[in-house]
Amino acid sequence: MHFLSIYDDQLSMMSQPIIDLSYPLDNATPPFPGNPPVEIVVQATIPADHPAGVPGAMNISRLHTGPHVGTHLDAPFHFFREGATIDQIPLSDTMESHSC
Image 1: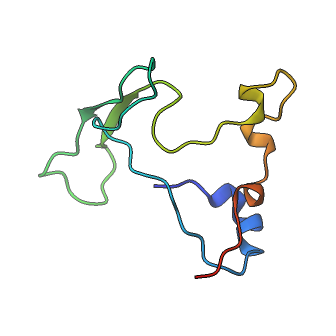
Image 2: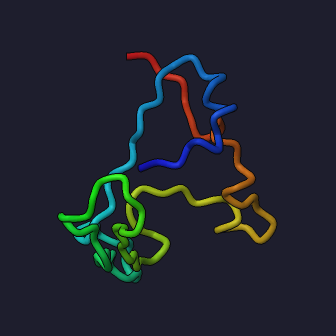
């Protein structure tokens, strides 16, 4: 699941389709050397006999990992004391026009 809804205004201005290049994150995803491995542990699941649409049950997972795993974008702040943080980078700056 991708949480792009906060960028809807920027996305609506783009005329080409978006191609998501990210890879799924799971326990087999290799970490960057020196970082801990990905660990996804199911903590709770919705019982099979729980009526659909009725509140009171949920799926819960715990995610433990280092910052350098899977598909990610390092903000300039990662390398430079005065660099922009990831929330300061417009989504449109991470996209490129293409033709197939």
